[in-house]
Image (cartoon, rainbow, N blue to C red; front, top):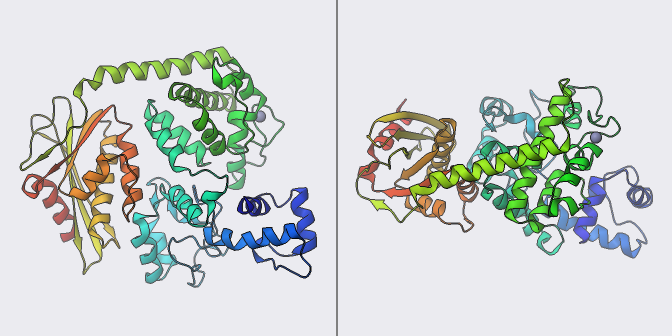
Length: 456
Ligand SMILES: [Zn+2]
């Protein structure tokens, strides 16, 4: 609980209570740099003591990295230091977000290699089984727990993500909610921060700054929609600033079907807001809710129609077998080259005739752990299937450990945990999917592609 109070000091430095404390105990410096001082009050002593816990927990909400200082914060997991390299190319005030390639949703490798020493680059990379852009949030939670946050009232985010990715909704809605939770929607506040617009006012009400929590939940225009939803959503009030907290709160209280409606309506609220920005009329709540309900129902129907394919059974074969009719099988493999310090991956997609539909290979630098390499390649295979618009996929490889982890619903507590988790939640957005194991011989095509990748 105290850690949470500390967090408040950091997060709302302008609130009255914080200003009073600051005036008295740490004028002119940041809370994290404050000293206990002489004759501390009981309250201040308690808060100050919890600071260490907070620092250890390092509770940045990493999300998109837009608030983490590249040089001043300790953001590389498992390293106790800030980056010690000399500042070059990008400014001293740069944020972690600036070294992410947003199109690829991955680190901007060429830039990173120019900015940091080889040693730092390796730290970023070899940890990336635990710290990819998407995984950042999980990592933060893990740290929170290590910093005794589990005893505070802050909930772990993992159940929230699991809940989200298990909702029976089209992928674009899941991704929308995920983006809103990570605060990477182009709200006015976010655009203002990036100096793209000159004011932060909500385009719907023109009276408050447009944060994700505001536009999707608290704005009068949004409230009118939520108030018109039948069932528990209508009666729910949430006192939270950020959309993630609102969503997490609802996850605790709503059943799947209500949460699905919530997500779909939130998507429509945002779509309506965009229409207004581009000069469209404000659709009435009843139409929005009707459209949102339709999305949920149609998705449910289409799933029922395709689920005839059956569940993912226990499968392990010696040789390559064709996938089910209308399904595409993706075989993947990874290979390492220790001398060049690279990993190669190969992915090949075939249909039930055995015809190759697509294949790819790629190289990623600084990966040396075979399990991490296999997990990265598996995740890429799932992504590849998504990009191809495949509805029914079978994922197959020869890495038993990764396959078991992908098939299990338990948390994976290893260096590949977050990669597997990401792959699994992406898999869960396919209308139909299965994961199977094949011996090396049956995975030859993917293996050769991976070898080919590192031979170049
Ligand atoms: Zn508003």
